[in-house]
Image (cartoon, rainbow, N blue to C red):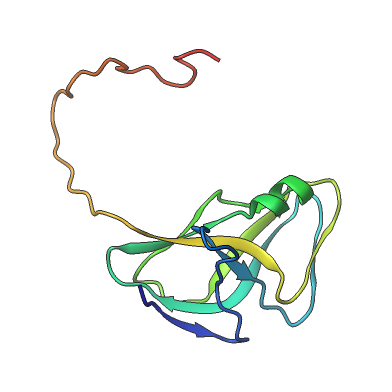
Length: 142
């Protein structure tokens, strides 16, 4: 699948392995950013994309940064809609104990492009029963 992309610094999202679903996103910075414990920051990538209708780009945390340094995404998963044409920025948070320095070109997140369906709601008074029913959090045990 081809997607139009513009890059201010030449960094393109890249798959690091053959079987990777996510492409790494890199920081596009004029100077390093120090992310203190508990602090949030919006990190520019210098990327602008033109997704076709029916597709979204999901921005996710990098698992290595999350487990080794405590760096995650403020909103868990970010969504880039097909009609958005602004710069892709990544909302990072430092849940770790130490400051984290973000340098230009550093891999800060990953992006997955996925197809989605539009929903048309059908209002009803009742829903079909299932074995699970209304069982929610922890209903099957620990």
